[in-house]
Amino acid sequence: MPLPAALLARLKRRGILQEGEEEEVIAESYDDDSKTTSTIRKQASNASGAPGCPNKWNPFHSCVEFCYDYWREGTPENRLPVEYNRRRLRMLKKYPLPNGWKEVYDPGVARHYYWSTETDEVSWLSPVHPKAIIGEAAPKLGRTVFEKIEYQKEIALAKIAQQEAAFLAGKRRRKPKSPSPSPSPEPQASDSDSSDGGGKGKDAEEIELSNFDKLKRAKRRGIDPMDPAAYGDCTTGKWSSGLDGRGEAKTGVDSTASGPLFQSRPYPAPGAILRKNAEMKK
Amino acid sequence: MSYMLPHLHNGWQVDQAILSEEDRVLVVRFGHDWDPSCMKMDECLFKIAEKVKNFAVMYLVDTTEVPDFNKMYELYDPCTVMFFFRNKHIMIDLGTGNNNKINWTMDDPQEMIDIIETIYRGARKGRGLVISPKDYSTKYKY
Image 1 (cartoon, each protein chain N blue to C red):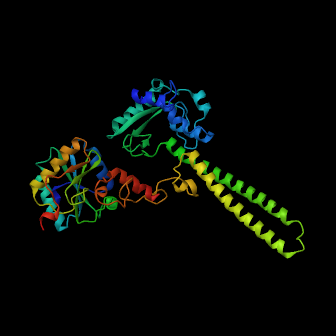
Image 2: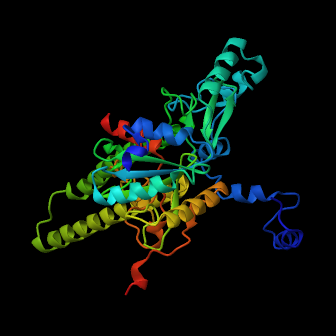
Image 3: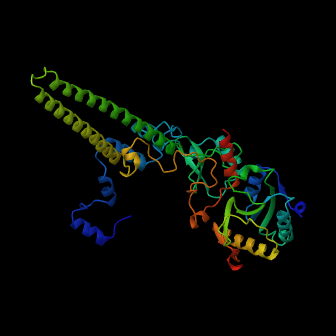
């Protein structure tokens, strides 16, 4: 959406907007400081990866340059085998799509899938089909997997850095102590005091530094600095993530809400409940 | 009068009944045929079944026979009536604070017809929440 002309002119006058630049560029200029953000941004810009990549269904696969170059646009829809189309249409005739579901063609996998515009769930078969498995899209799952791996990597790196720092600190501390204690007791005491104080100070500094690093890391990963994930060891998520909410009566809403919020929670459809019950039994 | 209305005997039947109804409101009564409050409700539903057959269809579900929905739909009242349209649960503001269902016995057939008609009109327009023609809150009683 282009900016209004008056605002555009004013922004240009203030030097916020360069000549001939679009507004999207402003948004991008916030985060071009590291590689990770650029990859995340790439993912965000094209959430489903390369259009022609046949590995899109795999949550452990994230598309790289090769996928774009090699697979290109994938199989065009008009070149699908006749047999496949016949079987697909027969299935659709037998199990017509419920309201809110759309058929989408995926050129990479060369198959149609069904997408619920309301819940953003997908299914390879018509959702009414008895064998249909309705779930989240693979790229979506892939992003969480990717985030988890990144997080583990960062923790490992931080641990190594901490160990190194501790090792170096130990070396430095040992050095002044290694010369034999001076004959008079008084200076020794003062020496040890000062060294202790210095060590504490350094430790505190280290912790501060690592906290600062964590915050920097959070900024890099685009996490709100007030989010406990920014400074603690927990992963990103909502307040409710990690809780076992499989048997909850309502979906996607805070079950502790009361008043008008409580009243505006529709129940899921019976089919959704049956599927959830089946999930619980697993 | 429960023997005059169709029963659904398992979760799959409930699901299919709701999925297969294209443009009629589904009125599902959850409860027990032997329950006095359900008996009254069933009688009311049976009385209007013929009149509203063009835009609504009634089903009875025994909550002991079909326990699948008890937890999710919070079915702990002796008699509960819920409304569905095109595989979607339709909420109705009855003024009671619970917009999800009618969990008392309604013995006036005309009131029930009005409610079902309101739901049908609202749901056809894509509303997920409709407002009942009559306020059923108890505040006027006291």
